[in-house]
Image 1 (tube, rainbow, N blue to C red):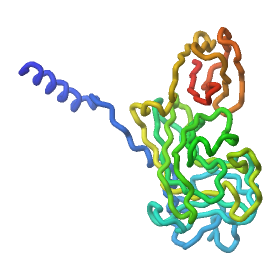
Image 2 (image 1 turned 90 degrees about the horizontal axis):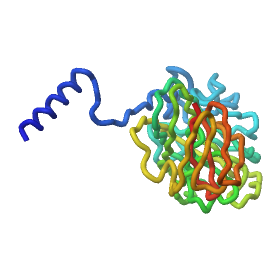
Image 3 (image 1 turned 180 degrees about the vertical axis):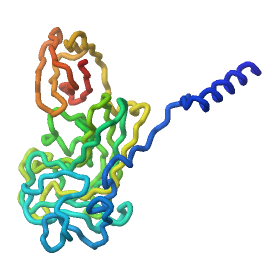
Length: 302
């Protein structure tokens, strides 16, 4: 016992002197997200008005874009987008909202790209509203997404190439309550991490949502966070996975699946396999493999 205690003490001493971590720890990297809490309208310029609208000549106070975030406002009708206090449980003072007088495109993104990250597993979180007009509102980190409601609410409007989980929340009729969302993703060294909210104009039953103000697909969001984690919780990355794969000289072979579809990291289909004996030749890059039961996993071809 004395030898064991001395060995542990020695290891702890070495770890302190060298900076080596004996046990993996989560690392909070939220500071890398620009304007994660929507408290600024420009660098070092705090938001101090009740409401700020990027497209409104009267209310933008000289600033016409979302500081730190990218989105295509030209496809949205009206000026119902911006920062305000119109939620009950926002973090800090302000939150962000995106509305539309018309119909959202099939895919509309509010996003930010983070670069220079180490290879590893990352957790992205935010606070997102329920809505009386749900379509496909979801938190995303690259091609990993979490939808606000349950899987049965998105039977016909999920996006091919994404790896989906579901928060299971119910809509909040007042649209003023934000709920915690979380999604995990894995990146390679130097791979950019794109985070944000995706939405669209197609409802879960596959029909195009009618035009209304605010439109089907609108959302409120606040308080994005980023954490580097040692492991992704079991059942999150590859739920109920009962197959395995290997990559050899650019050739992907999947065992235990009769059929699957391969997408590149941008969600473009590059191969479709309907024969268990068939392999796929892929160029160097990162791919998403989706199975017939809609589970998915990431493949890296070096």
